[in-house]
Length: 264
Length: 288
Image 1 (cartoon, chains in turn orange, green):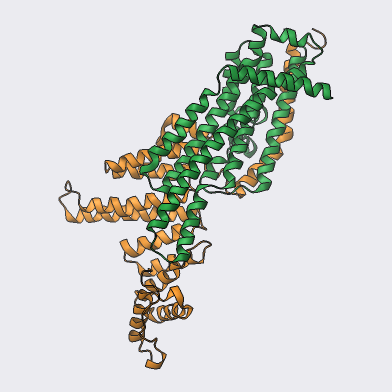
Image 2 (cartoon, chains in turn blue, green):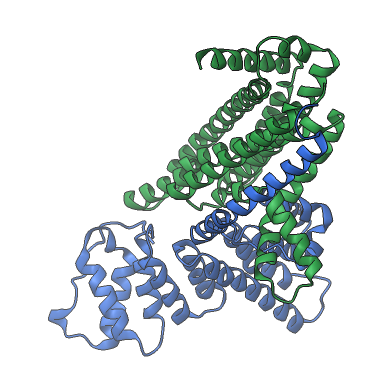
């Protein structure tokens, strides 16, 4: 063999690899920062996750199969739902949302399962004879659903969907109309928000004692926009607020048929 | 120059034909079963869940198949040529060894590119068909205003296909080419195909931890000197494969900025070139 032996060539090759690694290091760091800024690689796979998904799942997640692992666990959660294993579902949802924190769908459906399905099931749990404890469990599941949505919002701040869902949960499950109005208002300001959210803000505000004037102004504004915004709910609530606030007759809206009767 | 190009192309096409004769494309059948079967199974979920999981599973399967294909086919290229003595016939002609290696790599790249294309087309077709079904269903069941219906239909469309999925597939292809180049490097000093497969597979797993090792090494806080040396070795010797894993977040709806995409692409090309160059260096004087 001419020149350096294969062994010394091997050493030289390793040195070359080290040198290229050293040269590429700043680029790799910069690329990682750019990826983080764009919302990539933000998941840290810690020891607690390894305990949740097991050694093989953790290895798969580390090897670039984070999202297929999340999909697999989501299917498991669906199977748990069919057996009404709510505790297991909650644990699986926690793991899935840890693996895929930027997937709105996972946060949304996890919250729905907990706050609606699990809470309703808890209330009808025949194994629990105490009404008080059943109610407590129901409340815990609703809070769990709320927690999913709040964590989802923290991970995806610009999501109209999650703010809307949190508003619905506060409205329908916790009777927190002020909180619901605030969430609908946040959702309505975000890009891609459906137009009905503006009406939802007004409806919820009208249910908060002491905020009738604010609700009246919001409803009046919707009314002035005309067209699709003049729904039966807008008109009836506007009439209600006018009566409550004692708005003079000439300033009140006329009692006319709404243009769109099927809208929320 | 033209002579070199035609020699490399001839070796590349020959290597590709050899790989096709090994019936490696059968894996595409498995991929089709995974995607179509998965799509049928997921029909019981809501269409948003269905799309999310279809993308998760299809891109995950593509990643697995491409990486396996890259490592398994490349690891056997040199040992097979040595075993049936084809390598002596080729190298006895005026074919430099670096051209021989480049031709072999080209054969694997053609195989990987064609596989990505077929899998990508199949995946997008299934996605398109499911999208049409979801759009019809939404139109039939939606009760809101025309404006909100348009928003809902738009949300369905945005939730199904985006060009970022194509970017994810391109990066998966690039990662597999990088692995092929790394495996080619290993096979220049490996004594058997199995050895090359084992080393490359280990490099694949370690490569996914390279970014973690690099951060740990560079933070340098509260770690022993030997841990620091070990993490430095990993950070310098192995490629950062995690950099090419953008598909996990793309599936969740994160958009890839063009700058990031091209930088990642460039990093992949540089890694591939470095491994090929080192492979040529080692293979140049290897006794056959």
